Structure formats: C-alpha cells, structure tokens
Length: 401
Ligand SMILES: Nc1ncnc2c1ncn2[C@@H]1O[C@H](COP(=O)(O)OP(=O)(O)O)[C@@H](O)[C@H]1O
Ligand SMILES: [Mg+2]
Image (tube, rainbow, N blue to C red):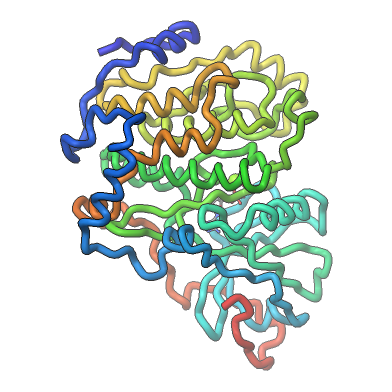
C-alpha cells in the first residue's frame, strides 16, 4: 500500500498511482475491481433493482427525483397573526444571522424549520431566499416554503423550510464516531451520489455555485430503504449565479477546510472540490485541507496573510491507518479533489463516476444500517413554547400542508 504522505507534489503523484485498498466491509465481490468505464457497471444497479421485490418507502423524495413530484408552495398566503396564533417553537441552534427554530403547527402538529433573523429585512437574507427559490423544486435541495410574518416586528424575515429531522452530515458523522464505527463504503457511495445529483441540478440546471458546501450545510431529511440517509443541500447564504467575472475574482468567504487550494473559489470547480472534501471528511475524519482556520470577521488582508503562512496540507486519501476504503472510492475522491481545478470533473462527470457504485435498493435492504445510525427523533409537542399573543384566536389550517 502507498505510504501516507502529505505534500502537494506527492499528492499529485498519488493521484496517478493509487493502489488497491481493502474493503472495510463485506459487501460483495462483484463490487470490487469494477471498471467504471464498462457498460456492465451501469447495468449492475438496474439488474439488482429489477430482480428485487423491495420497494422504497412510499414518501421517499428519491422517487420524487425520478418523477418530478416535488410540491410547490408558491401560492401560500398568511394572515397577520399567523405566527403567534398558529405555531409553537423551539430553538435548536443559532447561526451567524439568526436562530434556527423548530416550529410546529398547533392544529396539524406538522414540523418545519424557521430561521428567526436577528436583524430587520436585510439584503443577505433576501439574497439567500432568492437563491433557494432559484435552486428549489429538486429533492436534493432543501425546500423553502415561505415567510411567516409577525405584526410587532413586521420588518423581520422568518423564512420557513422543510424540517430535516435527522440533522446534518456533521452531526451524523459524530454519531458514527460515538459508536466507534467508520461510515461504510456503501453509505459513503450513497451520500456521494446524492451530492453529485444535487450539484448537477445546481450547476447545470440553475447555474448556481453554492460556495459553502460542508457537512453542516448538508441536511438529512429522512431515510430511505435500509435506513440510508436522504440528503439535501442547505444554507444558500453565500450562493451565487456563476459568471465569468466571478470566476476570475479571488474569494475568501466560506469555510476554509472545504475550499480548494486555488484563490478563485467562486467557480463550479470549487464546489466539486468541496463535495470531494465532504466525502473525504466522512471517510477519514478530516478534510484534505484542514489547516489554517480563518475567522469570518477577519479583514481580507489578514486572511490572505494567514493563508500564505499555513500552506495547505492535502492529505493522502488512501493510506490512513484504520480507515481503509475501497480503491474506487479513493480514486473518486481524488478526482473531485484534483489539485488542478481544470482537471476536476464537472458535476455530471462526477455523477457518472460515482453512480455505478451507489448501492441499489436491494443492496440497502440487504444491509440495513443499525438503529442508532438513524438519529434525531421528533420531539414531543409538549416541548414547544407558544407565542400566544392572541390566546383566544382560532387556530387555522396549516398553510404549508
Ligand atoms: N431545515 C432544517 N432542518 C433541520 N436542521 C436544520 C435545518 N436548517 C438548519 N438546520 C440546522 O441548523 C444549522 C445552521 O443552519 P444554516 O442554515 O446552515 O445557518 P447558518 O447560515 O447560520 O450556518 C445547520 O447546520 C443544521 O444543523
Ligand atoms: Mg450553515
């Protein structure tokens, strides 16, 4: 096996000479040594599915991806007291711009997420909503459902989103860590494929660059066959439409650890790197460039200086002791994280690369995940606080239902 090394030069060599690694789990011999260019591979998943009686869960949005049946909430309207009369809430976390609240409709008991912004209507929040709308309607993108107004603070935006009850990929990884288990190859391929699917939609159908792809911004909506997670891209605060001008600008926002080494990071190629980095993190516990944390508020000059002081350590993917993953997976990560941006695959090419290895439904059912891997449970209604500014008002039907 190739020995661990961490210099950029060696990284490039490793890309060319990646060696065969052992499987960390016993899936099946037919999955090893698959030649990704052969037609046989693309038919493997189909063949397995065709021969299987196993059906996906009826509400799976994976099926929606195939049928295009994604709900639209464009025409939802609210009365002025909608928030205080109809909803209970519970803060689940705080971000830079606002608090993330789990809200529950009192009558229907359905759950949603509402971002309670700290500031009055601001261009950044409006921009994020516009980006969500532009990217929406796809099962790999978190659905933006509308805005909940509140009379005492009419200028504050409260965007509402679907609730992803099994947390984000960062927490998901931590759950596996707590159980001292590495994510299985089948699981990594499954997540990789979905990330690539979402990227094809963002880049090629919407012309949007996300610019902040990282585990905490990838949510787990639910699970499909065998408890495998269904993921969604979230947090479009830094997303932008791709343009030639932007491609040429140096860019310093986003999350350092998941950004590529080149200074031009508003490109589609930088998103592809980030996707590879996320899978690298899930496989090895750190991203390829995990050095040099940069503070978001730091002046840009200081950021540049720090970056020069902390040269990136692209970590060799295959040879991490105790974290052996199959050679094809290593190669796919290395391809997405190619040091030269021009040599990275496009989103479609990445999908072509990973799709043949993603487990078919039959495979997922035959090898279900353990119960603890399906993490966050819906909290009971009693845990919710009520706004109750209008206690006698009649509760209305859920406008998002
Ligand atoms: N729709 C959602 N369902 C479940 N959890 C969510 C949802 N939206 C956000 N979160 C949680 O809140 C965190 C922060 O949300 P995010 O939109 O990324 O805000 P910020 O811009 O502050 O990073 C996420 O990492 C995730 O853990
Ligand atoms: Mg975020």
